Image (cartoon, rainbow, N blue to C red; front, side, top):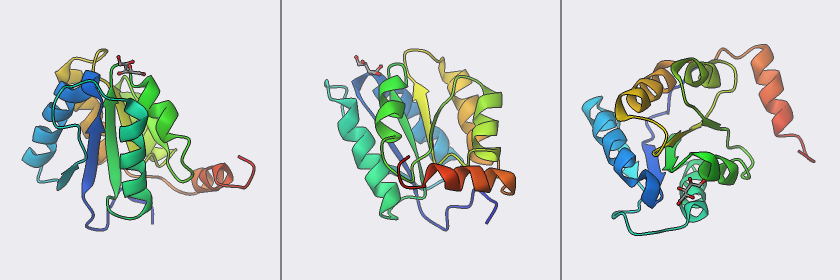
Length: 153
Ligand code: RB5
């Protein structure tokens, strides 16, 4: 199906301490858009390790508990590196509207990654909206995405 439909499943959010504040802003924005949110933590800005939260969120998507997810750390790098180690996860680290939109249209990204120490909140929300509102085009892009899942990759 060429869409960004989540089949009624919630959108998961998670961060580390450096992404905690932006996670809160994202969560409020999703709720204002009537998107069902699953907050996988952390629930305070105490220091934590980003791979632990990338794992929580990707496992939640892979086991069907969430349809898509948003990860936030300081730069977005650690979260994207961690999340993309899980087969079936296509985590897109985005710093602008265009990349977020193409991440959906061409890459069928199921995880958006943002840098809490890099982006102002207005830009982060603009990127988030572009990612949420853009549909996967399918076609030749489906073939390429399927190749990412081939054994040995
Ligand atoms: C935490 O200090 C920081 O390293 C982390 O949030 C992230 O930027 C890692 O990629």
